[in-house]
Structures are given as structure tokens and as C-alpha cells.
Image (cartoon, rainbow, N blue to C red; front, side, top):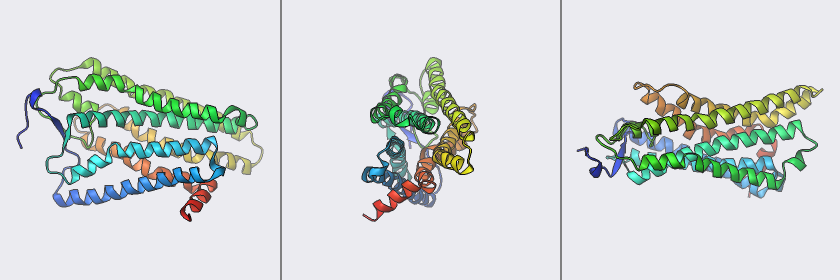
Length: 308
């Protein structure tokens, strides 16, 4: 296939994805289709369980339902196009499609970071200020926090991505990834843009560092409060409400830090795909399992919903 070398001829980009034989592509299609359907089913079940069970109409579960909806959006921003590429011969994504995917993928990722932070804040209030929790975490405050997460997440990368989309692209249009990512896109521009690269290199880690520090600080205060509880049973009960959230935080931030916190190398393309795959596909798949395994109220609500 002839690859255009001028900007005027470029109408899209080629996502290499996971190069392998036709049989391998078909196997990957089946594998990721199953993972995608399970992700939709698991997170959708949590949303429905929270909606139908009046006992779960509390800030903790309202945040969890919003987080599950976010996970559905997050995985949908990449997997459907990836599945189409498995069955495609040219693996082309349109220019507008590429930048829309880039915008939604990074915006939803930023939104997830904000949600994990306010979920940690909710647990901090519930454990450190149990008597004041109902008056502190009101329905109005919870709604404001949810709206703030979505707005901040979708504004964070808006300007840089618009600027990149207005740049000229020359030469090869091949992106060695399964999604549109800033690094390979900037490498295809006709003129190097160190300022834009610097902006992205700052915008990516800043929310991660600030929000991760906020989450760790919240859990430090939570642990200090838990250790003051006289009974072991009380300590276990308090920690059980945080275990699931902390596991999700470690999964998400651990893989994202590996991806964007370590220096890039030309030999890391395969590893970058695997790490990106983990936090963009595997983590949303595991979240419903993590949140339902150790949460009795959620398990009962899911059982009730599934019997409907």
C-alpha cells in the first residue's frame, strides 16, 4: 500500500495495533470482544444495582455508579476501534476520528483520576468523621463533586489536543500503537513542536502527582484513625470499606505511572502497548469484580438485581 508523503494527501493514520497473522488477529478479536462485553456487563450491573436498591442511594455508591459509567465510556473510547482494526486490512483511522479518540481517551483518563480522588475523600470523611459524615457529605456536595470531576477531566487536555490537531503532518502516517497517542502523533508533524511536547509532558503527570498525593494523604489519615479503634473487628470493618477502592487506585496509578512516569525509549513500543492495554482495558474489566467481592451490600444488591 502506498503511503502519502504530503500533508494534503493525509486523510487519516494507520494504527498498527498488534501485528500478527490473520488467525492471530481473529483470536485477538474474539478475546477482546469477550473482555469488552464482560466490562459492559459488570459495570452496567453495578449501575443498575445502585439504581434499583434504595439502600445504595448513598454518596459512596452514587460515586461508584458514576465511576462504573466512566469505565464503560473509557473502554468504549478505544476497544470498538481496536476490534474493527483486527478485521480490517488497511487499519486506517480518519484524521478526525484519531483526534476525537485522543481527546476522549485522555479526558476520560483524567476524569478517572479525579473520581478516584473524591472517592478517597468520601472514605476519609466516613471513617475519620463518622458522626459528622451525613452533614458533611450531603447529596448536594456529592452531586457538585461528580459534576466537577467530569468538567475538569474534559477541560484538562482540550486546548493542547486542539493545537495538535491544527498542526501539519508529513511523511509516514503509521502509528505503532492500537490507539492515537500524543508521542507518535507529534513525531509525524512536519515541524517539531517542543512547546507542545513540553505542555503534554507537564499536563500528564501533574494531575497524577497531585491527585495521587491527595489519595495517599487521605489514606494516611484513614489508617491513623483506624489504628485508634480499640477492637480488631472495628478496624477490619473500617478497612473493608477502603480495600476495594485502594486496590483500584493501585491498579490504575501503578500502570499509568509506568507508562507516563518513566522515560520513553524506541525499544518500548511493545511494552507501552501492554501497559496501556492494562489500564485502559484490563482495569475496567476487573473493577466490578474488585468492588463486588468484598462488599456485602453490593453483592446482595447485584443478586437482587440479577433475580429481577
